Image (cartoon, rainbow, N blue to C red; front, side, top):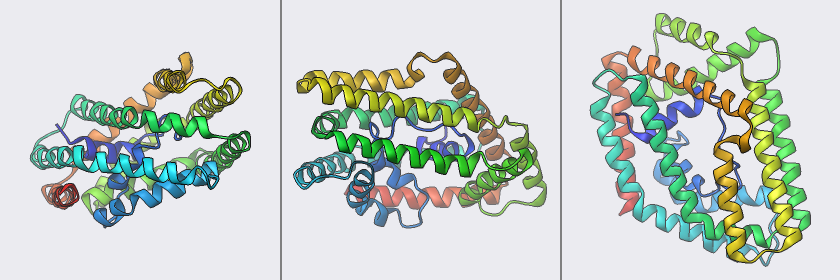
Amino acid sequence: MLSGDFAKGMMKNFTTQPYLSRLIKIGILATACLLAGCTAVRLGYSNGETVVYWWLNSYVDFESGQQPMVKRNIARLFDWHRKTQLEEYARLMMRAEQQLQGVMTVAEVSADFELVQQRSMAVIEKAAPELTDLALSLQPHQISHIEKKFQANNEKYRKEFLHGNVEERQLARYKQVMKHAEYWFGDFSREQEAKIRAAVNTRALDDEAGLAKRMRRQQELIAMLKKMQAEKPDRDTAMRMISEHVAASKSYFGDAMLRAASDNARESGIALATMIINMTTPEQKAFAMERLKRWTEDCRKLAS
């Protein structure tokens, strides 16, 4: 079975399925430093605490009294992540090196994606107390700041994914897929590129549904934060509210149409990722295995 990190790197770009509410999942950025596709994994991870802080600050605009708490909580999360998660990633990537020598099935890639989701949830659960403290500390103007940031992000999404006619959008998506396929496997032949282009074009253009899912999660998060601000619950109650929000996010808050769109996007993305993996040559697989080997070494050096 392909490593969770490898599968996520593929799936991240072969589907339009976004993550759960980004503010709730801020802890995942610790993992994202490893999955961002940079060539300096250790450097990126070592600077991850600063990156996460400034990313969060771009949403919240922290006041001076909040800054020490946020930085302290991020540091604790990274320390836990480094000590408990990186060695497991290294083992998964070692296994991926072996599994790449065979033929992958859709079921195996799907199972790996589930594994990544489970590991992501472990980070969320670990960060729940810190996320609760942050949510309770937010002021009305900061919640408004988050809303405006969401609006700006959505406008950027529209420009990137909803601009142009069908052919233009399909071409843009194909280029994105190839960018990340080449990161993992190196150069592709014209014949391979043609097959990938054809496969990409058969997928439904579901970017409108992607935007709808993003906006629903954002709306629910803002509603929860405003409710906390109005009711000022105790810490245990607030933590329960966050846990319920995360759980409800998995089913898109009971919206059957959004859930169906998400499932369809995921299934077609998994099928595309599986096809690309299996069409690669021994040389291309060796390229990916060498990259995985370097990541394995980085993970172990970071963990130590």
